[in-house]
Image (cartoon, rainbow, N blue to C red):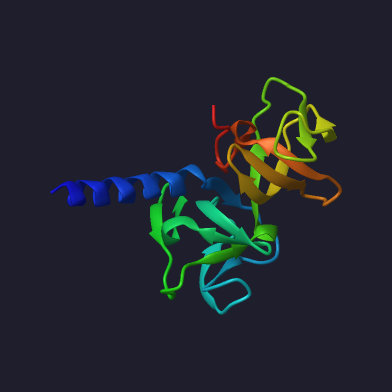
Length: 169
């Protein structure tokens, strides 16, 4: 019986760890009516998400610019959860078609930093809300790039919003 409890605890802890490292993002793709989802990085297109649907999803791992979609699903306002189809190897989306917004609604000055720490030097500062492309996750920090590609750096996750229709207040 103790073994069973230990297995349940390990599985629950592993699940919580995976969720803790997930990042909420939304589709921001201006190259056509659909955003491709692949079975592996640079792999076969197995499903598509309508680009104008305000779709939101959680991503959990970045491999060379490709994000693994958590649990193979996404959410669309007024439609609910949607399961992706066509792969038993996971579902991947390129970082160039997803985004997050900043949560500095009160005009707070935010900074992108050289590394995932407040002790790291700032690489870019801004006071307006902007959209960013997520590049990596490390604990409570997310490496991001501005949509124009001019600035990149690390920002605390608490300043990011992955909701395409609200401001995450």
